[in-house]
Amino acid sequence: MAIKVAIFNRKGGVGKTTLSIILTQIALKEGKKVIAIDQDTQCNFSSSMSYLRNDPNFKKLFTLKTDLREEYFDLPADWIIIDCQNDFNDRIRFALRHSDFILIPVTPDKNSVSQFTNIRQAAGTSKEAFQLPVVKIGFMVGNVYNKTQTAQVINQKLRQLRKSGYLVIGTLPLYETIRHNLASEKTIWWSTGLPAHARQHFELLYKNIEILNRDIQELRRKEREWKNEPPEDYYGDPENPDITIWGRNNLS
Image 1 (cartoon, one colour):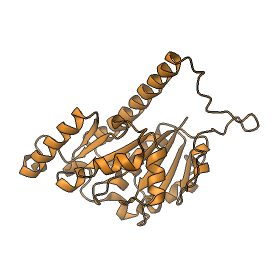
Image 2 (cartoon, one colour):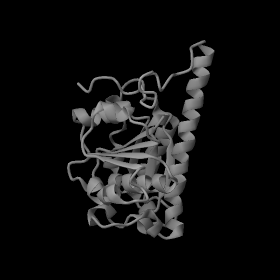
Image 3 (cartoon, helix red, strand yellow):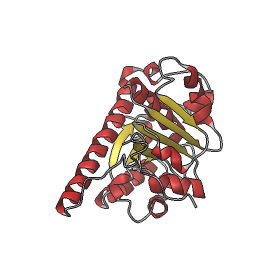
Image 4 (cartoon, one colour):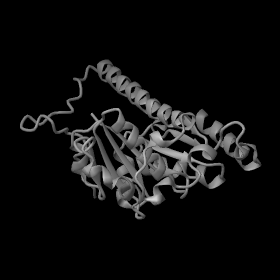
């Protein structure tokens, strides 16, 4: 079953598209099958990744969508990565409700951490706090951003969020990795083009998401076992055994 990740924040310019691109690239490098869904009206994600459609190395692994339909969640894949615009329209709410994780990048400014309550409400009451993991952008020790009074306030807010069950799943050094929105360049580039000391932060984030997903699946398995419920059948259509039954709810 695919790891479904929506990358979202109501604040613009926090690196949503850049994270979407690099996570997609790392997954493809790992030989994973990826469905990339661009839900940002600027279309930087799809513009930057469109060349992969004809890349012989990844053509069979990579699917790019510029709309969002419920049947996409039933397609066989290892990762489904959704780059979301900073809005709560119906399509974004659908993406938030039906993703396993809502990856929330935050920067050292107050607006980027001011929407957690609204995001969780949009995601639905069934979403646990740990399914909204946080990625800190530009908070590395030694970074000028980490020394500002605003950054210290944000760190305090993040400590409060941790106590409420949210996870800080990664920290990315802004001054080394995201000098500007790389997606806006619309050029062919790979995360391997980043220097090794910068790339390792993204690779660690990727691995942390996989670990968190395994932990959640194991937790759900134990809950079903405790309730004497049968195992979940993700491939429940006998006529189409490779098509999952997940995501059949209406978009409306």
